[in-house]
Image (cartoon, rainbow, N blue to C red):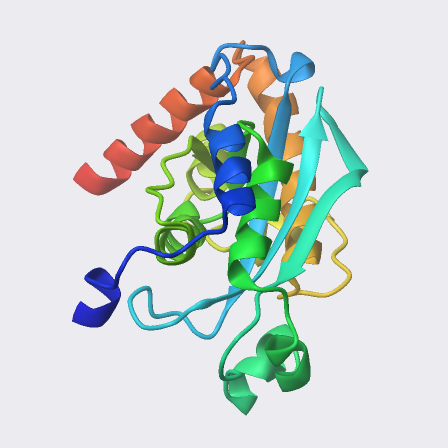
Amino acid sequence: MLQRWFAPAPRLTPAQKARLDAWRALPAGDRKIPFDHTRYVVVDVETTGLNLITDTLISIGAVAVANGRIVLEDSFSVVLQQLESSGKENILVHGISSTAQREGVDPVEALLAFLEYLGKSRLVAFHVAFDETMIRRAMRQYLGIAFKHAWLDLAYVMPALNRSLIGTHRVLDDWIGRFNIRIEARHNALADALATAQLFQIAIAQAHKKNINDFEGLYDLERTHHWLRDVS
């Protein structure tokens, strides 16, 4: 683990540095732009396991929600090349074969492509802590950057908007079942991102009814629910 923390800075080519600098130079955007006038990126990841310290990022799947609508043609999916493939039990979960892992995209190129796809759009996920940690670790390891981005966590937003379901709906499967969201392949990063995007659309519709119309409003709701849960 110490080797990971004190590893030398990654060596990027001049072209890769230029791409990273171009992403950094993008304007951050306004957190108070209404849902119907901005782009969000809903993301999900697959990893070698659930340990936030020792496991590694295998794939990223993402789909855009622009102006309140899912834009299927504005989606992203990549498998990061692994020096060693994950174990058989792990492969049974996400379905990414040993060959696909070893023949994946060079991690530097994969992560640069993700940043270029993302731009400075707000990120949305279900249980952000896991996805964010795995992406941040990979960004630091391969690109040498501290990836500090604005995230919205539907694992807290949905209970805050549906208080009668607090305690009975905890995991993503609970919510997609509740709202009859169809998912083609559970534990496929892109398919899970698409299901989460549909849940985000439901959250937006419910938020409008509470006069919450932008990222800032939902983020405040998320923080409040998080705090109330922690002190209860």
